[in-house]
Image 1 (spheres, rainbow, N blue to C red):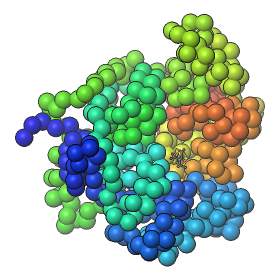
Image 2: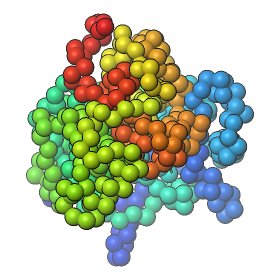
Image 3: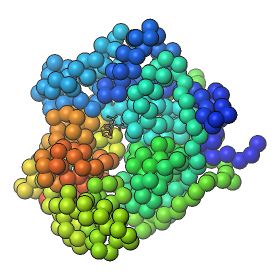
Image 4: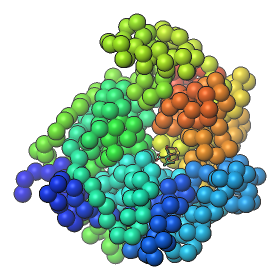
Length: 483
Ligand SMILES: CC(C)[C@H](C(=O)O)[C@@H](O)C(=O)O
Ligand code: SF4
């Protein structure tokens, strides 16, 4: 058989029917649901008198609309102040109950951001097709699963038929060779990739991330990278299976049990691109060239190194680019040539499906340990991605480090990643955020988002402005106290 990419293999394994017009029907193994994109889908099923095709393929949890303050959270759904949000979470709850779909409810210890919960439970597995009414479903591709976001009508279609109509994408390989420097993380890698190929660079492609730097990265980091494939225009991000993938999944609740484990692992080992597989496009980055990244504009591609400066529209390659820079600078309240390290911050947000896993919190805590959040900040918050991440962080004492430094320690949810709950930026405020989108108004009307890694966000919170976490010396380790 001809050589195949990982994407080709996953596609072939799920192809139900190829049609002559280029569309194809593919089978869906796992369907994740949240409160924002599911209500009309359930309503559609109800109106058509249909039932979900395969109940155990579905797993639901509320995340976008849940409050993250303990006080509101303690009261469950009734504690959600905003009416639309409350109705949405209540509707998910009612729908899951009436259709018999498994849900980690608002106060379940396993609740969290859907893209954190799926992998953490082993509900996302290598070789699966995974869909969710959410664009950041690409996250799950870190497990060599064919995962992408779908719209609400497709949510209904998957519920009803367990299948989806798709068109095959092209194959792109983004290879990161070499080794990352200390203080440079998965978030910096993906921001650098988007800086290189642009937000449309991946349009029409499934991007596989490979190379030695990716192979060295943990599952948490690989999820961070695949999470932002969509910000590079690609609906699908992928990483091939290796020991890191397999070790992460061992004994997860929904993963194969002890009797099935060896057979599953043997199967998963095939989920890599063949050595001589051909990609339609290959992009290569050198890990050594990647510095900690900060976005200065209103698109994830408007990014530079922390030691860089805000670009000058006068130096743009064409008029369109110049206008884009000018508009972004106006919105962001920045001036051309301004040093990134001179950007002062009002708030810091460590969380979101990009960077709210245990390793992200460990990295942020390592920087925050023994230090204090700058007085000039209005708020610095840490929002774990799930109840289990929160519990793990607390078992490791990370919450104490954050609280002692002056960070808020919140309940799990999407939080300030997008303004769909009580956590919002005020107009004109600058925020160092570990999330994935810096669009106008994304974190609140008029809010100004700068995307960074958890370590960079923690360092910025301490300094009150951006700093190179590598100069924040010595970078404390777990046993080192830094004054
Ligand atoms: C609300 C949801 C549909 C949306 C998405 O699809 O990504 C959200 O999660 C986001 O990050 O903007
Ligand atoms: S954390 Fe942000 S990006 Fe992720 S699903 Fe929630 S809103 Fe979307």
